[in-house]
Length: 275
Image 1 (cartoon, rainbow, N blue to C red):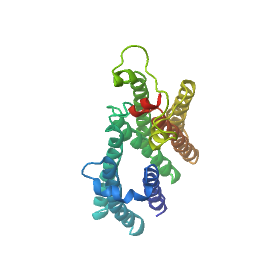
Image 2 (cartoon, rainbow, N blue to C red):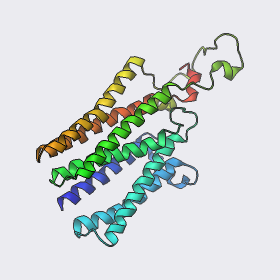
Image 3 (cartoon, rainbow, N blue to C red):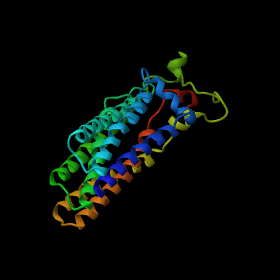
Image 4 (spheres, rainbow, N blue to C red):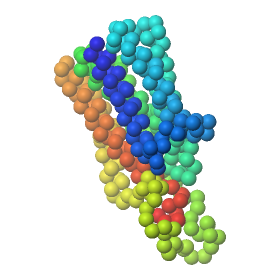
């Protein structure tokens, strides 16, 4: 009972937190409900539809597993549908960013696979911690956690390498057609920061960026792998403690990684502001 209750509580709780976080970044969060009607053309709307739709089979699976104590029949079908819905939701979330052509760092082949890899990585590490907490850890799952974490590490390094080599396809000179000299804006188009500058106009010093990248690698990838290796050699309850620590450290590292994901992105419109 408690394994199912805690597991489903964590899953549904994290999904809800993600939805609320997404809504909070909208220009008008109070109108978030209207976005559901734009699913034919908007990846943001599709994300909302997919995530809410996933609650239905996930809720049925939770009732069947936790309340009725069943995992076969319609409960198993609901579990499969919930898993499919979760993958679909992650895909739509990744496409929100991958489809934005004005942001070259996101409009690349690395964005969508990165979302899938990181979701599988962090989810498996969290599941491993939960199972070890009930003394039913799996060596196969543990190996999968380490492989996914190493894959995520490699993918993140490749993404950073790609982004660092990017060159803006246009600048103030090409926009105005003035080839000689350097064109600079005398003043901003407006006097105060707007929504776009707050969300996509970050300026981060190179040394700070390098430091945050190091923190991401240590917390999200290196430390969890080392902790999981130690789990292989230790009995319960030490394995449970280290598994929980690995999940906690990785969660903190992914928060830093997500902040960098947004901070390093540069929207083309920032050229108007001399950024």
